[in-house]
View 1: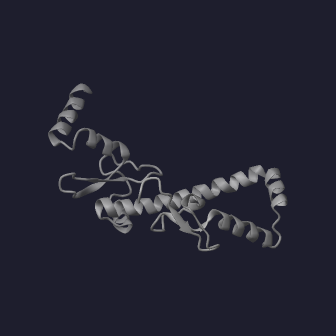
View 2: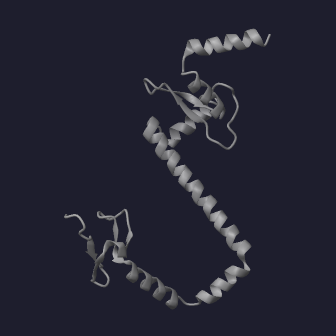
View 3: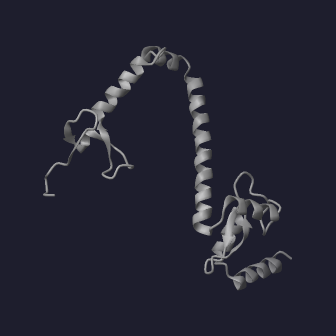
Length: 174
């Protein structure tokens, strides 16, 4: 493609060739743009709303203005629900990708540990315990709370360093 040439595509709805800036971005399509132009999408939306029984844009806006608290509460509830769904999917994907571990295997490990950190014995509240593993062999050692996992990481998973820190604490707390 020569420099300065404009990229165009044909709208599948109206059949008019337009610049790609007249189309919405769409990651699912190979070229990254929607099949229908923005004008056709907007016209479809306006028509759909106009023909929806019992829907009146002006009345809807008035109701929303009067019930801002209710609308906000519902949006917050939807956001929290969706956030939990996304978090669960992300956790499932992360466990599989990083540790080749299923949620069922994670839950079995958690149950075997009594639902608490393998080092300090505390639960992590509402947060999940993290998977501790050997960074060289990727062998899973157990589930830890955030504090214990950070402590091991900061000491570099080094046993002599951990023992030195423990003896230091024992010597200076006596």
